[in-house]
Length: 530
Image (cartoon, rainbow, N blue to C red; front, side, top):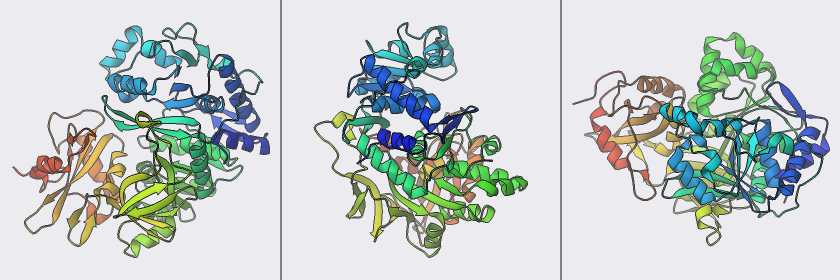
């Protein structure tokens, strides 16, 4: 089985002079990208990086991040993705669990997390852990020029990448390559450990399943999409740093002119379609090049698919279902998915299982295994590796096709329709300005459930649940184009936080329903029932 680093380098050997990556006005060839990956691996090994060393990684998506991440794995190390926006307490807990020997961060992060600027960041709501002192005795790698706060002996990424040596180690498919934090608290952070083999299997399946080919222009800022593009020999283009297509879809459209494949979340595509609806002259220009739209990160439902086909009838759609522990699980053709949904299938048809996934149903629950499955959870290894994953998703399998039916034990009834909130909550949580979201079913006098959506705002958090917050009206406005008419909520309520219980901090749906009962007869622009 080919691992992800060797898969990328093999693509570079096949087409060394082809364009590999374009970002910030510069294009790198596959030859140059491969040289940098090999040089970084050699430089890190010369500086003492040993097989199995973990590197706490806080470099924004970009050419430096791609080359450094692949160089670390190629040298035998493990990349530990670390989000500085998680808050200092949680970030510290995650760093303690990961126990890295190395820290890689942008020079600006070192600056912003030290001295007076750290206090300024805190006053603006960003709790940054002090990167220079976070991990005692760690070696540091800086991306960018030296700035105050950067440790004096930090290695410059530019210098590591400047050589011509080849430091790629052969390694094994079961060598750890990536640690990704998912849920958990400061007391019990949860992290998934992927191997070179599990990533190689999953990302190769992704490339094959969405139709990556040599030379294809792929637009995304997601490493887990861009790396499959490189494996397939495509030309990966990154949008401008920090550009949020969901919040600024008009600006993002400027990047779509040359794209042949676009990866987007449903919320992002919804925002782009709304711009196209108001500026139809842009549609023809977009349709001239765009061949495929790949949707992932949240459920993709019929209303959005209908809108895409109405606006861009010649574009192919691929939808991806997966999770952190195993990505992808299934890939669907958008037209077939829409046909199945409109035929009355009960649930969400998410497509055909990819080759690296084995699936079975146990008492209605989807259980997964196969070469694409992560090794396990960091806190439980090596004693308890994952042999299979109980997903918590209810599903049925017909041949090699998978249909989801929501989360175990979570279902509302509205008239004759079963409503599975797990199919909709990730999509709502992906809307701009929304930090978290959940649905509650409030029983009425005849036994039906009245649906209320609760959203936690990213900014301007209220002191108590309210329907007067601007985000309530915005979410209510966006939902008709994203979810089925039969599950549109009676009200959208903005809440300070979602109620959670137990050590796993799972959503307490009963407590949520009780707290929102008075809003069951409200609208997002009206008043709650006293």
